Image 1 (tube, rainbow, N blue to C red):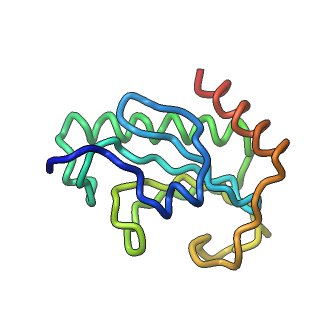
Image 2 (image 1 turned 180 degrees about the vertical axis):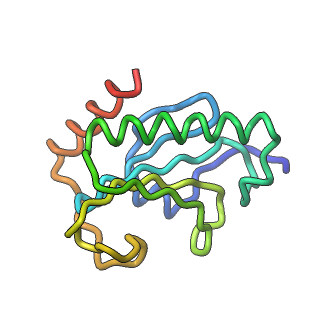
Length: 136
């Protein structure tokens, strides 16, 4: 896998930057209906978790756990969903979604569930600040 890391255009359009972790960019999906983080390893050409080295896989799961803990601290939930689908965006990325009974997609998946509702600017800034504090 050669080349330079570049964030997929769809992920760039749909998310806002939260933090740069040792392996991954941590992003917040700009959809106020769901508290939803996305981790994207900064490795060019990665499609599957198995494409990462063993050490990178361990780092990825450590960062997923960090992101999950921060998300739960900022957005209490009934269930935390994790997923690495890649059917639409092939670039390796892992979703961490805080789900609440009765949310806009409950009990179904969040993917493809209606139109995204962007965060109000103040709410977006506050959630990102809270997530950064929870990660510290």
